[in-house]
Structure formats: structure tokens, C-alpha cells
Image (tube, rainbow, N blue to C red; front, side, top):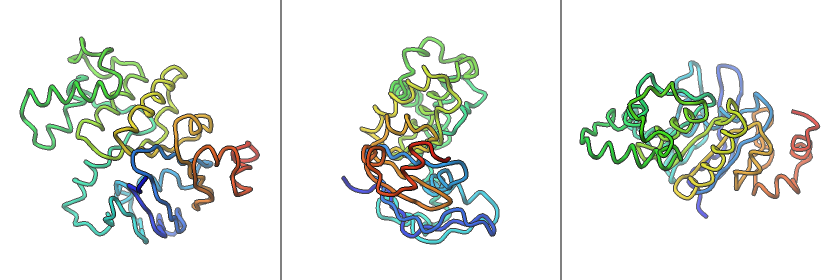
Amino acid sequence: MSNKIETIDAHLYYGDFHALKGITLGIKENAVTALIGPSGCGKTSYLRLFNRMNDLIPYTQISGQVLLDGQNIYQIKPAEIDSLRRNVGMVFQNPNPFPKSIFENVAYGLRVNGIKDKSLIEAQVEKTLQQAALWDEVKDKLNQSAFELSGGQQQRLCIARALAIEPTILLMDEPASALDPISTGKIEDLIFELKNQFTIVIVTHNMQQAGRVSDYTGFFYLGQLIEYGKTRKIFTNPTKQETENYITGRFG
């Protein structure tokens, strides 16, 4: 299995704060990689390297290489950043639908990217709502406000919105932390289904969730990657004592 994303000696500074310290890691294509570790350890900062979201934070400095399909995304032209972000979808911790109808939430990215063909937009909206396991629940109320959906449905709508512009990578920053257990289960089932088509990187504080949904796991601590490997090994036979201490609840 080849690497879809690779970081080589990646450092990230927010002003004087050294948030990421020399991270070298390869993320496999069409697999789910979980990033775990205590709050403030650098998981989300690392995730945001892949779509250059950290660029939006003042006084940010980045060194090292971040490769997507072998291309260093920090050497692309400014005009190509929008194209990068179309290829790297992102789902945030709290559901954040737009104040629009269910249909228009999903269609938004297509319209922004210049697609005007009504039948094409309708077909893509249906396709991505099906991918997000939401179509059967909303197909008769596409013109209703997205805010009328439950929290779990809103999060799946946000996943559909991210998928509509056909990225190859899906970043998820604690996508189920604000949801009830039933909705969380649906999101986890969805992640399992989507990995056949997408490379997925998920930040989670939930050890059980990481164990259930991911193929690979990276443990971060104080801005460093302590250990990375197949999830089963990380959870049952970690190499580093710090990893074992965190997974068994001795700190974090």
C-alpha cells in the first residue's frame, strides 16, 4: 500500500511556540489513519498541514516537506492552493452546515467551482448524500433548512458537502465528539465504508473509536510523533512506554 501523504521532518511554529517537532510520517492511501494523544499535543496542527489551513493563522512558520502524491504542497503557487483544498476535504469537530437548504449545502461547492448544469448538480447531490448514508433520511425534504436536521444528520451532511467536490483525501477533526452514541456509531460506520474510496485521517480523543475505525494510528505527545504503526499493534503491543501509558489511561 503506497503513501498518499508523507511528511519529512515537518516543523510548525505559531510565533515562538514550537507546535510540531520534526514529524516524519507516511499516510497510506485508501486507509484510515487515526491521530491520538492528549489535548495540545499537535494532532490538529498536523492534520491542518495537509490542506494548508495553518497558513490562515498569523505568525505561522513551517519547515520540512509535506508531500501529497509526491508533490511538496508548500512549494505550489498561491493560485494552486484552492485546487489543493478541493482535493483535501475537511470535516470539523462541530457540525457546521450553512444557513441554506439541505440540497444547497451539498451543491454549494459545485456552484463555487463553476458547475451550472442543473442535472449534473442534482445527480452529484444525490450521489454524495448516499455516500454519506443520509439520502434515505432526507430525500423527501431536500428544500428544508439544514438546521432542521439532528446533530448527527448535520455532521453527515457536512461530510456529504466535503465529498461533493470529489476530493481524494478526507480530514476529520474529532467528527463525532459532539454527537450522541447512536450518531457516533453511524459516523464510524460511514468512515469504514468511505475508506474504500478515500484516504481518511481522523483526529480523535476516543481510544475505542480509534481502535474501531482506523487501520493505522499515530500517537502524538508534546508536538512529537512518539509512535506510529498498525492500529492493532499500537493498541496491543506498543513499542514505546509513553504510548502504553497513554493507551492504558495512566496519563492524558
